[in-house]
Image (cartoon, rainbow, N blue to C red; front, top):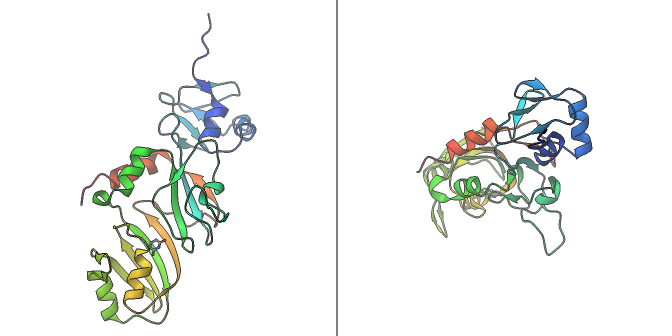
Length: 240
Ligand code: URA
């Protein structure tokens, strides 16, 4: 008796966010998919927890059913699963096969990197304050902050919910600041800049812990590689 174990490869690929099942069948037909290092043919079944699946040499899949998307959030898109005012949401920008949620929040006016996942354990680690991973922002501000103002940003700013933790701050140009924080307070960067008298005009998140991607167009997303998920887990396992 022949046992057909595992799941069809195109289904696993589609769930990992690589496109529709039909699109994933084409990837297989084009010879771009390997299973345990060997080029796969259509009809192949895999055990995602045991077999190593790669597309164009990039390994996919961390665990069965888990998906991790990295989105370049455009301005004007809301960071919730649904919006009572009917504005576009980040969840609408990624595939809907799995029910994913944004990890933390970006303001509607903020752009840049955002993770969406159904991986509850990773979400917990990334959002729990004691594991706060670094997040890097580029903030275009009004005016030109003085060196003294930058020092205040670095050392701690008094906000209405307390003094901010030390941050890494540098001026890329007189009105463009690179700010790295590891707290996740509401509108933190905007409030910090406002507090020194230089309100933010444009805010872009450029890094989440070890994750960067300067090549995703606004509104575009991709699946995280296994290595990226592992690197995020490592970054979020150091208690501060
Ligand atoms: N800080 C802010 O002020 N806004 C964001 O969206 C993220 C960090």
